[in-house]
Image 1: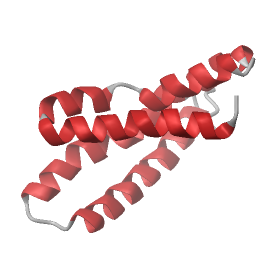
Image 2: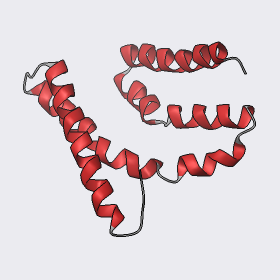
Image 3: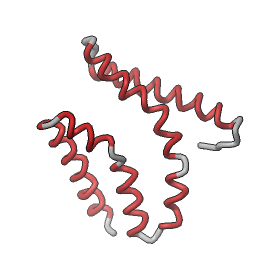
Image 4: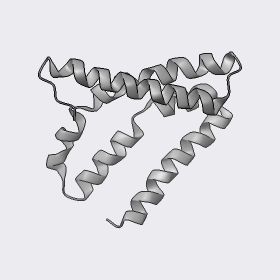
Length: 115
């Protein structure tokens, strides 16, 4: 499948979720929480004949989600406190990265290799 078709379809999903969030915060949040990137990647792998790669993609996905949770907890709190969006996102991205590094280090002791 040509890359530009994947780009258009994936962009349509993101744009649709953004437009929905403008009209209904709760419905937009519901659509946002669905793993669209994961699902579209799975579909593209299947369509392009790489179905055998799907389990390798999905196994570490949960572990990658966990360090990103502070963004969803911290950003509304920081925004309510009046902090700048970009500074808040930068801080939370740094925190998520730090938590990911710690998670990788801890999981090594249990035989889980993320990198």
